[in-house]
Amino acid sequence: MKSLKDKFNEQTPTMKGFILIIILLIIGIILRWDSIIEEAADGFRFFSKK
Image 1 (tube, one colour):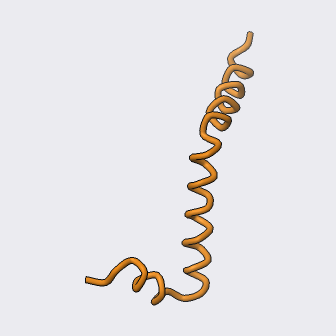
Image 2 (cartoon, rainbow, N blue to C red; image 1 turned 60 degrees about the vertical axis):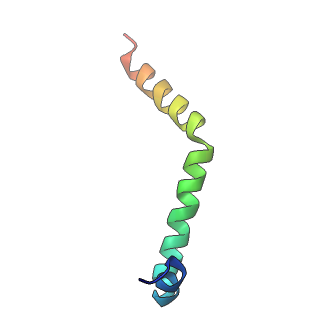
Image 3 (cartoon, rainbow, N blue to C red; image 1 turned 90 degrees about the vertical axis):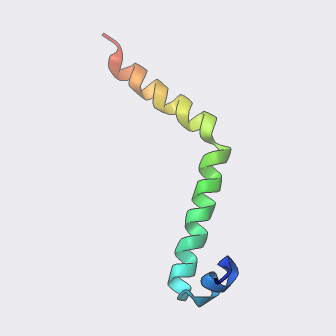
């Protein structure tokens, strides 16, 4: 069974870029999760005002 490093190194440069961008996006979402949820809740509250 191949390690993750070996599988990563077998990918094309484009695929390696996609993988790195996805990892960075996930890390960014995790770090800003409270802010993201608060903004989403504010958006729903805006539309629920009568």
